[in-house]
Length: 269
View 1: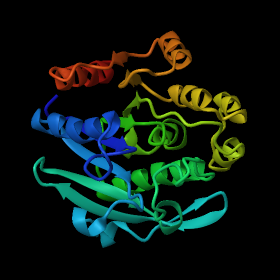
View 2: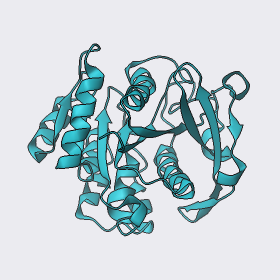
View 3: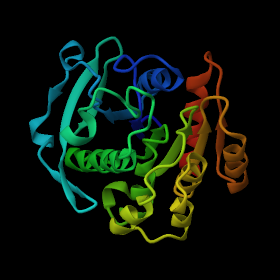
View 4: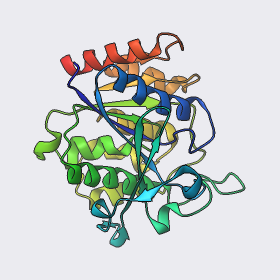
């Protein structure tokens, strides 16, 4: 297992965003796995509220400059990088002026979800994939933290199935207490169909509520982590019924061992 590669795709990571269960675990878990001999790469969005000077972010010119087309519109992909010195962990940031320069994360100053969060998650997923391809780095496991990061599972399973870089990759999705109110853009299904996705599970996005969106993602996962309580009971019941390997939220003392064993189980499945 020492040579295995894990790609962490994270919605939030501290210290770049305030501490909560997700941002803390997204910070400590990659370090813990690296110390156990795994090779890791870690990505998150470069939200506009992240202070680039204080956190010493800098653009990686050789990885930047590509345009991604989403819903018939071009969006420039910019890649930035920073390191957490105390952890010897490098973080890659997906940036774009239209999607990520605003000074808030997923909601505006009043707490209302951004209307284009669906496109933002598509851009983030595709940005991570394109960057990994440029790095020529083939992961064994892709671990998504949070619903915003989970979209990458769809691309890896249905839209990039023939890419040798991702052949045989296992996808883990961690669920947190990060649900959104209302729905994502009702046109999300059409946007994914425009990306080339043809799947009966798209019917769940006819009403893209938080539970329906998670159920949609579940069809593309090899393992699910209930990383924080309370995950909605409707969602937990659904995933338990899928028969996927599950990991319940682990205690702080032994959490890294639990994740290492879970990755092992996923890779052997």
